[in-house]
Length: 449
Image (cartoon, rainbow, N blue to C red; front, side, top):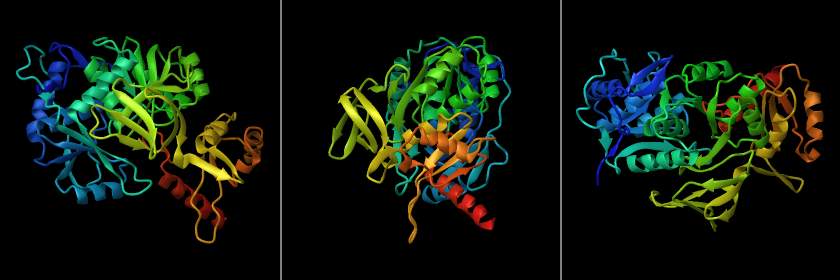
């Protein structure tokens, strides 16, 4: 079997990445990879913690040349990294940040000066389909984190199928800007591999605030693509950000409310698309929330329900995967998502999902951020549905009154706690452990008076 190229066909002077208004060519990228690869530590595994997305790309290609496997843990918390170091002793961290915590051996990425782009590629950058690229880890919220292998062939297949679903035109040259880090599988595949495989420009920066997103998108003359999350879409809508022309917005990592999607489409004069996926499967389906609640799977994906739950299969999977989501399967190609089974709560004989409760909470005027939370009961203490709300200048009673108009009284939070911010991770998610720590901190402050 022939090796699969890292880059599509092109010329040395083709621009493949963009940083602060300046292009980085294909020839420069290949030189950077050739310079870095022989200097990397002689180890089997790598944590690529480069914040600059172009540096991450170079580090990925250089590690592949050395046969090294990238690890994608669900968190960068020191205890998580310490556990990885103990389980994968032949591991190091590649970073472009001089203050990287020294949990394991650290190799600092140093940029090389740009040079002339003349000349042809001496040797194509390509890898066998079976080569191991990465291990992606689940969060471990329901037990020990599990790892899932991504091979080069499966990774490229997912990227190309997803790009076709998005209607990407190879070589169009638009700038792909992402608010998600490349160390998360969504950010890795869709802000790194997707632009590279389809000839779009990879934006090296990772903007966070609405004005930063606007600035990076405006740094390139052609309409760009925004790879983001519901959290950042909401922030841009609430900020009334004036974004430049966008080809489309792609959202993932959490369910996107159709009303928020409609507000974003109206405000930014574009389409908002959404991907569904998991650590186990990668992205497998898409929808446009303002048009339909039905998810349509990618080519080669098949879905079904069996005795174990929601089953996802594809020709490029080693085995079928069973996910813990509550769905209605319409056909092997379509399904409706109701949320994760673990998000369903039952009080006084009535059921509702935490996702539905959160949508009602976030729809209240003046609420900047918020979430419902159902902690596990402690010995001798009944677990109570609570809510954390970020709403500067808004009274607690006003929020409770608005909730009374929207939800059944049995699901009113007891208590509702006002906080300055929520402990979201880099992709906007709220890991259960983070919410438990927040609850303990708030309760401790309340006891202290």
